[in-house]
Image (cartoon, rainbow, N blue to C red; front, side):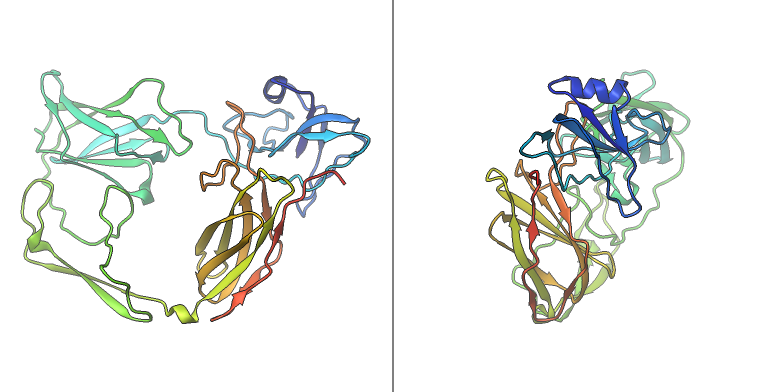
Length: 362
Protein backbone atom coordinates (compact mmCIF):
# COMPACT_ATOMS: atom_id res chain seq x y z
CA UNK A 1 0.00 0.00 0.00
CA UNK A 2 1.19 3.54 -0.80
CA UNK A 3 -0.04 6.55 1.19
CA UNK A 4 0.22 10.26 0.34
CA UNK A 5 -0.17 12.98 2.98
CA UNK A 6 -0.67 16.58 1.82
CA UNK A 7 0.88 19.33 3.95
CA UNK A 8 4.23 20.75 5.02
CA UNK A 9 6.47 21.38 8.00
CA UNK A 10 6.39 19.40 11.24
CA UNK A 11 2.84 18.12 10.72
CA UNK A 12 4.08 15.21 8.57
CA UNK A 13 5.03 12.91 11.42
CA UNK A 14 1.89 13.56 13.49
CA UNK A 15 -0.27 12.83 10.45
CA UNK A 16 1.59 9.63 9.71
CA UNK A 17 1.29 8.26 13.23
CA UNK A 18 -2.20 9.47 14.16
CA UNK A 19 -4.33 10.00 11.08
CA UNK A 20 -5.42 7.96 8.12
CA UNK A 21 -3.91 9.00 4.82
CA UNK A 22 -6.17 11.11 2.63
CA UNK A 23 -4.83 9.40 -0.51
CA UNK A 24 -3.79 5.79 -0.85
CA UNK A 25 -3.34 3.20 -3.58
CA UNK A 26 -2.54 -0.50 -3.87
CA UNK A 27 0.65 -1.72 -5.52
CA UNK A 28 0.65 -4.11 -8.46
CA UNK A 29 2.19 -7.56 -8.49
CA UNK A 30 5.25 -6.07 -10.19
CA UNK A 31 5.70 -3.57 -7.35
CA UNK A 32 4.61 -0.52 -9.35
CA UNK A 33 2.10 2.02 -8.01
CA UNK A 34 0.42 5.16 -9.30
CA UNK A 35 -1.56 8.02 -7.77
CA UNK A 36 -3.93 9.78 -10.16
CA UNK A 37 -5.94 13.03 -9.99
CA UNK A 38 -4.03 14.47 -7.04
CA UNK A 39 -4.56 18.22 -6.49
CA UNK A 40 -1.43 20.31 -7.13
CA UNK A 41 0.63 20.89 -4.00
CA UNK A 42 3.19 19.28 -1.68
CA UNK A 43 3.03 15.65 -0.60
CA UNK A 44 4.97 13.24 1.53
CA UNK A 45 4.49 9.73 0.14
CA UNK A 46 5.16 6.51 2.07
CA UNK A 47 5.01 2.80 1.38
CA UNK A 48 3.35 0.91 4.21
CA UNK A 49 3.03 -2.79 4.92
CA UNK A 50 -0.22 -2.23 6.77
CA UNK A 51 -0.55 -5.46 8.70
CA UNK A 52 -3.70 -4.53 10.61
CA UNK A 53 -5.35 -2.69 7.66
CA UNK A 54 -6.10 0.47 9.65
CA UNK A 55 -4.35 2.81 7.15
CA UNK A 56 -2.10 4.20 9.89
CA UNK A 57 1.50 3.40 10.74
CA UNK A 58 2.19 1.20 13.78
CA UNK A 59 5.87 1.61 14.72
CA UNK A 60 7.60 -1.70 15.40
CA UNK A 61 4.88 -3.73 13.72
CA UNK A 62 4.24 -2.36 10.22
CA UNK A 63 6.92 -2.27 7.56
CA UNK A 64 7.52 1.18 6.08
CA UNK A 65 9.26 2.65 3.06
CA UNK A 66 10.51 6.20 3.66
CA UNK A 67 10.85 8.67 0.75
CA UNK A 68 14.10 10.37 -0.21
CA UNK A 69 12.32 13.72 -0.69
CA UNK A 70 8.89 15.34 -0.67
CA UNK A 71 6.86 15.53 -3.87
CA UNK A 72 5.87 18.92 -5.30
CA UNK A 73 3.24 19.02 -8.03
CA UNK A 74 2.56 22.25 -9.93
CA UNK A 75 1.35 23.35 -13.35
CA UNK A 76 4.86 23.00 -14.83
CA UNK A 77 5.51 19.58 -13.27
CA UNK A 78 2.12 17.93 -12.68
CA UNK A 79 3.72 14.45 -12.60
CA UNK A 80 6.46 12.88 -10.49
CA UNK A 81 8.08 9.61 -11.55
CA UNK A 82 10.56 7.08 -10.13
CA UNK A 83 9.71 7.45 -6.46
CA UNK A 84 11.06 4.14 -5.17
CA UNK A 85 10.72 2.62 -1.71
CA UNK A 86 12.55 -0.03 0.29
CA UNK A 87 10.54 -1.53 3.17
CA UNK A 88 12.15 -1.54 6.62
CA UNK A 89 10.92 -2.29 10.12
CA UNK A 90 11.76 0.57 12.45
CA UNK A 91 13.11 -0.39 15.84
CA UNK A 92 12.60 2.28 18.50
CA UNK A 93 12.82 0.02 21.57
CA UNK A 94 16.16 -0.31 23.39
CA UNK A 95 17.61 -3.76 24.14
CA UNK A 96 17.02 -5.46 27.47
CA UNK A 97 18.61 -8.44 29.21
CA UNK A 98 16.39 -11.48 28.71
CA UNK A 99 18.44 -13.82 30.90
CA UNK A 100 21.87 -14.38 32.44
CA UNK A 101 23.16 -17.90 33.04
CA UNK A 102 26.37 -19.38 34.42
CA UNK A 103 27.47 -22.05 31.93
CA UNK A 104 30.57 -23.03 33.92
CA UNK A 105 32.23 -21.63 37.01
CA UNK A 106 34.14 -19.21 34.76
CA UNK A 107 31.67 -18.47 31.97
CA UNK A 108 28.43 -16.47 32.02
CA UNK A 109 26.18 -16.08 28.97
CA UNK A 110 23.95 -13.00 28.79
CA UNK A 111 21.03 -13.25 26.36
CA UNK A 112 19.37 -10.03 25.17
CA UNK A 113 15.96 -9.33 23.67
CA UNK A 114 17.47 -8.57 20.23
CA UNK A 115 20.77 -8.58 18.30
CA UNK A 116 23.31 -6.05 19.51
CA UNK A 117 25.97 -3.70 18.26
CA UNK A 118 29.07 -3.69 20.44
CA UNK A 119 31.80 -1.11 20.79
CA UNK A 120 35.14 -1.05 22.55
CA UNK A 121 33.58 1.09 25.28
CA UNK A 122 31.43 -1.86 26.40
CA UNK A 123 31.67 -2.43 30.15
CA UNK A 124 30.63 -5.49 32.16
CA UNK A 125 30.99 -6.16 35.86
CA UNK A 126 29.75 -8.82 38.30
CA UNK A 127 28.86 -8.27 41.96
CA UNK A 128 28.14 -10.81 44.66
CA UNK A 129 24.79 -10.83 46.44
CA UNK A 130 26.11 -8.70 49.31
CA UNK A 131 27.29 -6.00 46.91
CA UNK A 132 30.68 -5.85 48.62
CA UNK A 133 32.76 -7.65 45.99
CA UNK A 134 33.08 -6.58 42.36
CA UNK A 135 34.43 -9.01 39.76
CA UNK A 136 35.70 -7.68 36.44
CA UNK A 137 35.74 -10.01 33.42
CA UNK A 138 38.96 -11.32 31.97
CA UNK A 139 37.43 -11.30 28.49
CA UNK A 140 34.19 -10.54 26.67
CA UNK A 141 33.25 -12.58 23.62
CA UNK A 142 30.57 -11.90 21.02
CA UNK A 143 29.57 -14.41 18.35
CA UNK A 144 27.98 -12.54 15.43
CA UNK A 145 26.12 -15.70 14.39
CA UNK A 146 24.31 -15.44 17.74
CA UNK A 147 23.96 -11.68 17.81
CA UNK A 148 21.85 -11.58 20.96
CA UNK A 149 24.30 -13.45 23.23
CA UNK A 150 27.27 -11.96 25.08
CA UNK A 151 29.75 -14.35 26.73
CA UNK A 152 31.66 -13.14 29.79
CA UNK A 153 34.76 -14.99 31.03
CA UNK A 154 35.89 -14.36 34.61
CA UNK A 155 37.68 -15.97 37.52
CA UNK A 156 35.93 -18.92 39.17
CA UNK A 157 32.66 -18.02 40.86
CA UNK A 158 31.34 -19.94 43.90
CA UNK A 159 28.54 -22.39 43.16
CA UNK A 160 25.00 -21.82 44.46
CA UNK A 161 25.73 -18.14 45.14
CA UNK A 162 23.68 -15.32 43.60
CA UNK A 163 25.33 -12.63 41.47
CA UNK A 164 24.30 -9.40 39.79
CA UNK A 165 25.77 -8.67 36.35
CA UNK A 166 25.78 -5.13 34.90
CA UNK A 167 26.28 -4.12 31.25
CA UNK A 168 26.97 -0.53 30.13
CA UNK A 169 27.30 1.32 26.80
CA UNK A 170 25.43 -1.16 24.66
CA UNK A 171 22.97 -0.59 21.80
CA UNK A 172 20.94 -2.60 19.32
CA UNK A 173 21.55 -2.66 15.56
CA UNK A 174 19.30 0.40 15.12
CA UNK A 175 21.40 2.40 17.57
CA UNK A 176 18.86 2.42 20.43
CA UNK A 177 20.43 2.75 23.87
CA UNK A 178 18.66 1.75 27.10
CA UNK A 179 16.97 4.64 28.90
CA UNK A 180 19.05 3.82 31.97
CA UNK A 181 22.81 3.94 31.72
CA UNK A 182 23.12 0.26 32.61
CA UNK A 183 21.32 -3.06 32.16
CA UNK A 184 21.33 -5.63 34.96
CA UNK A 185 20.58 -9.32 35.30
CA UNK A 186 20.84 -11.98 37.99
CA UNK A 187 22.28 -15.48 37.88
CA UNK A 188 23.45 -18.27 40.21
CA UNK A 189 26.95 -19.73 40.09
CA UNK A 190 27.45 -23.37 39.11
CA UNK A 191 30.09 -25.96 39.96
CA UNK A 192 30.81 -27.05 36.40
CA UNK A 193 34.43 -26.68 35.29
CA UNK A 194 35.56 -24.97 32.10
CA UNK A 195 36.49 -27.85 29.77
CA UNK A 196 36.40 -26.00 26.45
CA UNK A 197 39.40 -26.67 24.19
CA UNK A 198 40.91 -24.33 21.61
CA UNK A 199 39.83 -24.45 17.97
CA UNK A 200 39.82 -22.14 14.95
CA UNK A 201 36.37 -20.68 14.33
CA UNK A 202 37.38 -17.73 12.14
CA UNK A 203 37.92 -14.04 12.76
CA UNK A 204 34.53 -12.39 13.07
CA UNK A 205 34.70 -9.03 14.81
CA UNK A 206 36.87 -6.31 16.30
CA UNK A 207 37.31 -8.22 19.55
CA UNK A 208 39.37 -10.85 17.70
CA UNK A 209 42.68 -10.50 15.83
CA UNK A 210 43.04 -10.20 12.06
CA UNK A 211 45.93 -11.82 10.21
CA UNK A 212 47.72 -9.56 7.71
CA UNK A 213 50.49 -11.21 5.64
CA UNK A 214 53.78 -9.36 5.14
CA UNK A 215 53.62 -9.80 1.35
CA UNK A 216 50.96 -10.33 -1.30
CA UNK A 217 49.76 -13.91 -1.57
CA UNK A 218 50.33 -15.78 -4.82
CA UNK A 219 47.38 -16.29 -7.12
CA UNK A 220 45.63 -19.65 -7.47
CA UNK A 221 47.59 -21.10 -4.55
CA UNK A 222 46.51 -23.12 -1.52
CA UNK A 223 47.85 -21.87 1.81
CA UNK A 224 47.85 -23.46 5.24
CA UNK A 225 47.50 -21.39 8.39
CA UNK A 226 49.21 -22.91 11.42
CA UNK A 227 48.52 -21.78 14.95
CA UNK A 228 51.04 -23.09 17.50
CA UNK A 229 49.11 -23.21 20.75
CA UNK A 230 52.18 -23.79 22.91
CA UNK A 231 53.18 -20.18 22.23
CA UNK A 232 49.83 -18.86 23.47
CA UNK A 233 47.95 -18.75 26.73
CA UNK A 234 44.32 -18.47 27.73
CA UNK A 235 42.74 -15.32 29.18
CA UNK A 236 43.19 -17.05 32.55
CA UNK A 237 46.99 -17.10 32.04
CA UNK A 238 46.92 -20.87 31.60
CA UNK A 239 48.97 -22.59 28.87
CA UNK A 240 47.39 -24.32 25.91
CA UNK A 241 48.44 -27.90 25.13
CA UNK A 242 51.37 -28.44 22.77
CA UNK A 243 49.18 -28.62 19.67
CA UNK A 244 49.22 -27.11 16.17
CA UNK A 245 45.87 -26.08 14.68
CA UNK A 246 45.63 -25.89 10.89
CA UNK A 247 43.23 -24.33 8.40
CA UNK A 248 43.52 -24.06 4.60
CA UNK A 249 42.29 -21.63 1.96
CA UNK A 250 42.92 -21.11 -1.77
CA UNK A 251 43.48 -17.73 -3.43
CA UNK A 252 41.86 -16.68 -6.70
CA UNK A 253 43.78 -16.25 -9.91
CA UNK A 254 43.14 -12.54 -10.43
CA UNK A 255 43.60 -12.92 -14.17
CA UNK A 256 40.54 -15.18 -14.24
CA UNK A 257 38.33 -12.65 -12.45
CA UNK A 258 36.10 -10.10 -14.15
CA UNK A 259 34.95 -6.53 -13.57
CA UNK A 260 31.86 -4.34 -13.94
CA UNK A 261 32.10 -0.65 -14.79
CA UNK A 262 29.71 2.18 -15.51
CA UNK A 263 28.65 5.66 -14.46
CA UNK A 264 26.10 6.83 -11.88
CA UNK A 265 24.36 9.89 -13.34
CA UNK A 266 22.33 12.22 -11.11
CA UNK A 267 20.13 15.30 -11.62
CA UNK A 268 21.35 17.06 -8.46
CA UNK A 269 24.91 18.40 -8.24
CA UNK A 270 24.88 17.98 -4.45
CA UNK A 271 24.60 14.20 -4.89
CA UNK A 272 28.34 13.66 -5.16
CA UNK A 273 28.95 10.12 -3.94
CA UNK A 274 27.35 6.77 -4.75
CA UNK A 275 27.67 3.21 -3.45
CA UNK A 276 27.33 0.43 -6.01
CA UNK A 277 26.37 -3.03 -4.74
CA UNK A 278 26.62 -6.35 -6.60
CA UNK A 279 25.16 -9.65 -5.38
CA UNK A 280 26.15 -12.93 -6.97
CA UNK A 281 23.31 -15.28 -7.85
CA UNK A 282 25.62 -18.18 -7.08
CA UNK A 283 26.59 -18.42 -3.44
CA UNK A 284 25.01 -15.07 -2.52
CA UNK A 285 28.41 -13.33 -2.31
CA UNK A 286 28.23 -9.54 -2.06
CA UNK A 287 30.57 -6.86 -3.36
CA UNK A 288 30.49 -3.08 -3.26
CA UNK A 289 32.46 0.00 -4.21
CA UNK A 290 32.21 3.74 -3.55
CA UNK A 291 32.49 6.18 -6.44
CA UNK A 292 32.00 9.84 -7.27
CA UNK A 293 28.84 10.42 -9.29
CA UNK A 294 29.39 11.33 -12.92
CA UNK A 295 32.64 9.35 -12.98
CA UNK A 296 33.27 5.74 -13.88
CA UNK A 297 32.96 3.23 -11.07
CA UNK A 298 34.71 -0.15 -11.12
CA UNK A 299 33.70 -3.32 -9.29
CA UNK A 300 36.85 -5.45 -9.34
CA UNK A 301 37.80 -9.07 -8.67
CA UNK A 302 34.43 -10.63 -9.47
CA UNK A 303 34.20 -14.38 -10.14
CA UNK A 304 32.45 -15.27 -13.38
CA UNK A 305 28.68 -15.49 -13.10
CA UNK A 306 25.49 -13.46 -12.95
CA UNK A 307 25.01 -10.50 -10.63
CA UNK A 308 22.20 -8.24 -9.46
CA UNK A 309 23.23 -4.60 -9.03
CA UNK A 310 21.84 -1.57 -7.27
CA UNK A 311 23.20 1.89 -6.55
CA UNK A 312 22.58 4.26 -3.63
CA UNK A 313 23.27 7.98 -3.47
CA UNK A 314 25.40 8.39 -0.34
CA UNK A 315 24.23 11.90 0.49
CA UNK A 316 25.92 12.07 3.90
CA UNK A 317 29.05 10.30 2.56
CA UNK A 318 29.19 7.76 5.40
CA UNK A 319 29.60 4.84 2.93
CA UNK A 320 26.41 3.21 4.21
CA UNK A 321 22.89 2.94 2.81
CA UNK A 322 20.66 4.95 5.16
CA UNK A 323 17.03 3.92 4.69
CA UNK A 324 15.51 6.76 6.70
CA UNK A 325 13.50 6.96 9.91
CA UNK A 326 10.27 8.52 11.15
CA UNK A 327 11.31 9.13 14.76
CA UNK A 328 13.63 12.14 14.63
CA UNK A 329 12.70 12.36 10.97
CA UNK A 330 15.33 11.46 8.37
CA UNK A 331 14.78 11.02 4.64
CA UNK A 332 16.00 7.83 3.01
CA UNK A 333 18.83 7.90 0.51
CA UNK A 334 17.84 7.50 -3.18
CA UNK A 335 18.46 4.10 -4.76
CA UNK A 336 18.00 2.25 -8.03
CA UNK A 337 17.90 -1.50 -8.67
CA UNK A 338 18.76 -2.81 -12.12
CA UNK A 339 15.91 -5.11 -13.21
CA UNK A 340 18.20 -7.36 -15.29
CA UNK A 341 21.16 -9.45 -14.23
CA UNK A 342 24.68 -8.58 -15.36
CA UNK A 343 26.85 -11.39 -16.76
CA UNK A 344 30.53 -11.29 -15.73
CA UNK A 345 33.10 -13.25 -17.74
CA UNK A 346 36.65 -14.14 -16.83
CA UNK A 347 39.35 -11.65 -17.80
CA UNK A 348 36.77 -9.19 -19.05
CA UNK A 349 35.37 -5.84 -17.93
CA UNK A 350 31.62 -5.54 -18.46
CA UNK A 351 31.31 -1.87 -19.40
CA UNK A 352 28.38 0.50 -19.70
CA UNK A 353 26.41 -0.69 -16.66
CA UNK A 354 25.11 2.79 -15.89
CA UNK A 355 22.61 4.06 -13.33
CA UNK A 356 20.55 7.13 -14.22
CA UNK A 357 18.79 8.80 -11.30
CA UNK A 358 15.98 11.00 -12.61
CA UNK A 359 13.30 11.97 -10.14
CA UNK A 360 12.21 15.24 -11.71
CA UNK A 361 8.64 15.76 -12.85
CA UNK A 362 7.93 14.77 -16.43
